[in-house]
Length: 124
Image (cartoon, rainbow, N blue to C red; front, side, top):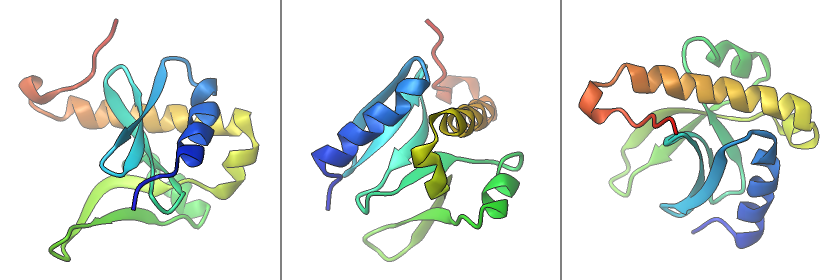
C-alpha cells in the first residue's frame, strides 16, 4: 500500500518550516530530504518518523514513541534508525521545526560515519 496523495501533500506543507527540504515519493512512502540526506519518512499507514540516533532517541522515548521497523517480504525486520514522531508536533510548527532539524542533524552524523565514497551529504 502506498502513501496517499493527500498525506504526501500534507507532509510537504509541514516541512515548509525547514528550508531546503524536498518531500518526494519513494518505495510506497515519502521521504523528506535536505542536501541529499533523508531525515524523515512518511509511512503508508499515514505516520511520520524522524531519523534518530544515540543523541535523540532519549527524546523519542520520553514522548513514549516507538521505533519504525521495516518488515521485508521475507518477514525479516530491518531497523533503519527512524522513530515515530510525537503526534503533538503535527499541530505545532515551531516545535515540529526543532524536531525536524534534530533529525536532520542525526542524518548528518549517520552520513559522516560512512566511508567517503558512500556519503550522500551535498551542500550547494
